Length: 264
Image (cartoon, rainbow, N blue to C red; front, side, top):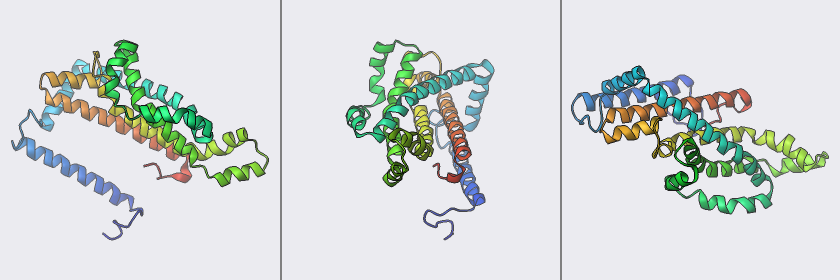
């Protein structure tokens, strides 16, 4: 036990997997005891069987697949737009104090505003189609993402930059050949984290004027007190988030094998 609880030390992978699996099984057992045992009303927490039936029904009539496709499309497009804008701005802010002074004050101001508060404005600006969903996802992820990318770039040691100058490299060569490769692992990890944030804003993005999507299905189920469909939508969003997270981790380990295991 002392080895398993060593401060910031690795533990055997079999122990890691066993601990995770056992804890998940215990949570599932507790869920079954509470629901099948009648300790909790189905209106508050349905049984696993009820959720399974809701999943089978949604798969058979096609609504589950349609909602899932719509949500994946909105998440990926909204996150890609945010990333394409955040990357150059974050790199400029991390390397040049002028751009940091230019962009950081408004970004710091806006990033504390809740994305849900922009829903009425986003409808006025972009209508009620998918563009409005992209706007909400952009607002929810961009401002945090650009600051994290700037921090990734700032982590490049100044001594490394000074040594590069002594070898005759220009500032643009240092940016391309030294700073970018050094900060790229951190940037990829930031992209993984911000894509996870995008999933958490999905229900907000599909809160108003949506006719499809997992967030829409959750809100529709709430109106009819269909708790099993609410939890099903939450579970599907969680599973999709896990898939994207593990995909980024696999990409990280493939691109940066010398930093294997450092992606949180």
